[in-house]
Amino acid sequence: MPRRPIKSATLRVAVAPRRASAHPSTHASKDETDDEAKAIPIASLTLNTPLTLLKTPKRRVPSKPFPFILLPSELRIKVYEHYFGHADDVLDLGPDNYKCIHKLLGLMRVCKQIHAEATHLFYSTRSFRIFPTYPGRYFKTKKPLLARLKPRQRQCLTSLQLRLGPGWNAPPRGWVVNDALGLQDCANVHKLSVYVECDPSDGFFKGFRHSEGFYEGFSRKLLANIIDDLPCLHAIEFDARSCVKKSGAMMHGLLDVAVQSQRLIRWGPERGWTDAEEDPVDPDPAALFEGLTLQGYVPNVVAAA
Image 1: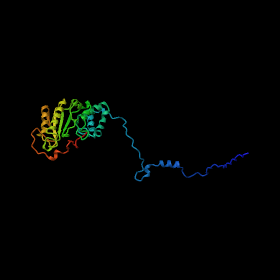
Image 2 (image 1 turned 135 degrees about the vertical axis):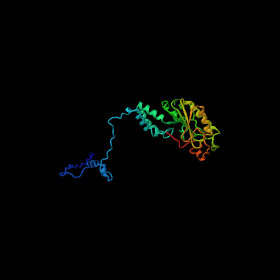
Image 3 (image 1 turned 60 degrees about the horizontal axis):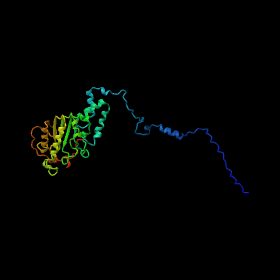
Image 4 (image 1 turned 30 degrees about the vertical axis):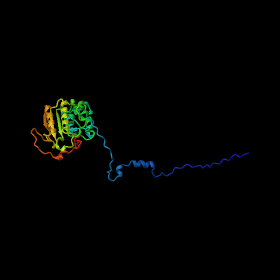
């Protein structure tokens, strides 16, 4: 008969419980040390920082809102003028429009009254460029800044600018007067500024221009279409660079269009023209191509907006 396996005896040792010491320990526990470290101010751990608590200043909230709407209209207009004071006098499509202009227009979302007052002041005190001149995709866009405005905003405009010269070798396809441009909505535009950057009929441009009289004819037709679509246009102001002659083919054609439209003709401050005949002065060859490339782009134009 087989024997059963003998179970090994398990050695059981009784562990005596740890007796508490009669003398309390003088060493702090780990938790107590962490609590004490967190309680030390950060300013007391540096040598350069004064022993003061670093507190974040609380935002001061006025106890009573300022009654801006209750101010006289004259003071509100002064506030709007100061608020929009950093915006350019001539607005155009450009890469800085969002940073310089779009954020300012957030004021118009406060209430209906501020929207009406600020909209009228902003759009009536600045001149808007009809066709963009900033190089690149803005210059070749089919939707200029004027076409991007709402009819309500175009009704507030009082001055427009037409800048001729960019694209003298190949004008963009978007430079066309149509219903989408919205000139019919500009019922309060009384002044049209025409700035001529160059005259391709000058002999200096021979060999570079598209053909004889091409850009001059294009500019005359463009100006005539703009004048016909502006319902309340009163005056046309001409200005140009120092290299442009009033007796040249470019200015001669534009002046003929203005005279036929029976609008008042004025002269801008930069060129210094008057109603008198221009003195014959030989143009500076360096000034003819200043700021222009063969495509007619102008790198130093005013962009807004």
